[in-house]
Length: 445
Image (cartoon, rainbow, N blue to C red; front, side, top):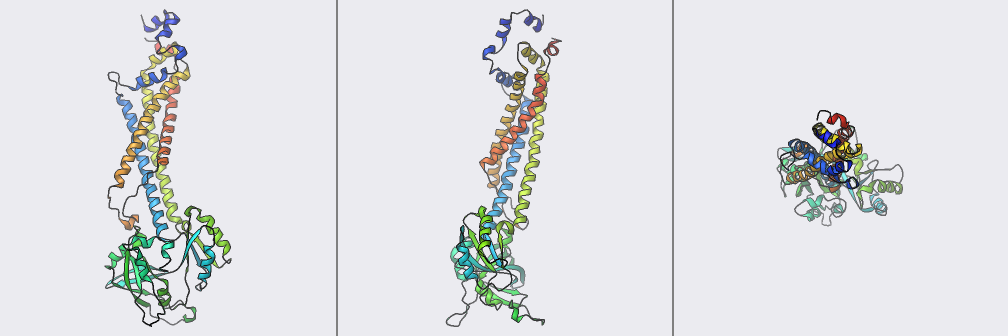
């Protein structure tokens, strides 16, 4: 006699007794059956196909969290270097006669959100030591105020070394000292220069004074500078080209009066720089100045980094999506294997929604175990990356290490996305199981 025949000749009260829990208390039997389906038949451990499905989700989540942490680390590292070396806002006057910069500084420092200002001169020149020559970007700064707008002096062994750049164009004793410069570590290696060495700096322009411009040819002007410090910002673009000196030394170099290129500004909130820049623009004479914040100056860099991060995140989301097909296959195989059990449950009065809940729980259990283990695995991978030297070429990647940024809410977001994908993956097989006809399931039993 078949199991269906036995059930058919049993009283309804006995049939309800066969269920794991009485009908009035059946709210938890779906979970019990779901766990039983995922286990191995002979052992209490999970079945092989269940482990394969979990492994797929684990690898996808681990890869996604690792990529997001590394790309976020690159973005944060570049932002820290850019904001550490450069000021937050630049005010540049159209033309080359920026003589009222001190009055402009007083006006700017009165703007809410502005914490400090400092004048600067910027030129592209050529540095030579012995037989070694390279192009450099030389920036004339005010040694006593530069630390208020830039962290670059802090990247040296002696943060006070920047004060040694101080240059007096008109000394009382009439004896001028050799101007000093501060160079990056990469540039120092390129020129084989050390602190105390002398470097010849050459400019193709003899003078920036319009009164001295003429159609006659002039020899390039040059000046010898003494290296007073070597900094290391960790950003190849700066360490290999940027040179600092006193802006008064550059004024004398180009036979200029008391003029500068612009004014550096530091603000108290770098993410409110747009509003502060608008306030700066309002207090300055219209049409005479150009105001650039750090986002505009580095727009291409941060746009490309953000786009790369988004693209990589989307691509690795597809890995989780592919892993979810393992869950679909697992549930389909379970449904095929458990058709008779489903038919018995429906014969006993289980509803379509209750059958669906069983298989949805199975998929969510697989997804939850894979997601949680993937998040933990991603954390381990990020920790290993953080403490491993991969020997990145700074001339290519601009930094010489692989940065990692671990943020808990990004990990939670990855986990939520993975669980959402797993939930949608369970719907098809669960709906199929819920619609199974009990007669078809018991026909040949």
